[in-house]
Length: 444
Image (cartoon, rainbow, N blue to C red; front, side):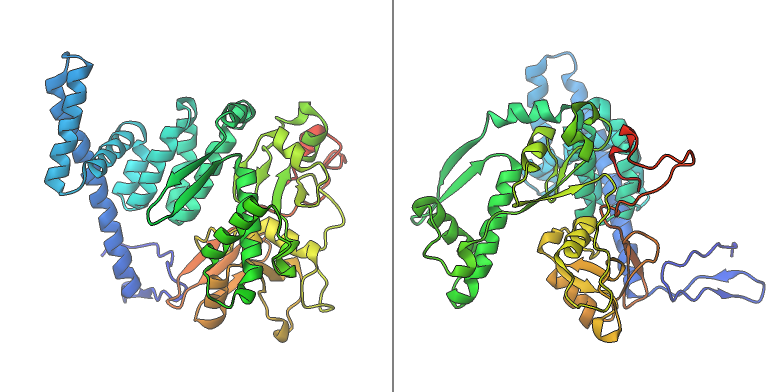
């Protein structure tokens, strides 16, 4: 047996010494056996993609030099062959062929990570799909960041973070692309069955998310009055119809009639003031959406109370703690907790923090304080799991809000917040952050 360096995968890993001083690994538990199978599936998935690409190249040789029309027919023939052999649809076969070409030809590091079991086939599929949508000149740089992310993040979190990376990389052209896209805004009616139809609105993402958020809040306010006879989706549809047809919510319960849309926009403060600083840092970001054009950020930051503005220049006056003086976090602290996390702090969860509950890490009854380092946003499902199962959840001291989840089997999963809280620092020269335009972003 070769000597091993045993970084434990579980907090209770019992690496034992034999008489000759060699390490003996722990006995696999039920979760280890599942993970082992998943790793083998990744290895086989990579092998399948390589064989699919090799098959395609071999069958395409017969179309070489015979024109695009012949090549298109051969491509269709290859899809049909693969679909029939694998007993899948031609669409599914086409997807596999496209992914194989992307990973074998353009994103080889991702294919190697898949072949060694470090990422899943779903991670590899996301890389192929999203990077193919990015400009070719950005793909190599994005791939360097995408593979490590895929190796460490759950699928849902990985997709969201990679989308943000791609959007941020393209931020310099975002304004121009957004103005072109605006010309395609429209409303479409899709005919359904049994007397139903769909209303499809294509408009700026900020407005669409605000519409959906307002409908959700109003539906939740109506739900108790409705007596549980309608689902949340049904209530949203009913409220939307009332608003669009009647143009008023006067007939709704008082709790619902005053609800307005709320959107959280984070924007470098100097970019709001001077165009020359717009390219100095990260682009403006809307919670749940991603980067937006600076013109839209300036519009949202113009003073309307419906928009919560978070300026990424260091600011004073943030409510970080009220100690033991109050149990419910005050509104500024709630906003800061949600802004920092951006999402539920459960592993892999994508629920926006604005829809999460604020939880005390150390319970109030056990002496916990109402403070930034003791409060976290959790969706209702993860909140219930945390409080009613064997999972242990704690905020890692000095991490800026990272949370460690330790499972009942002893495995540890770390969830990092999207942002850190801006603070004042002093440069070695004595210059305070904020004295120079380069400090348009908070020093994290």
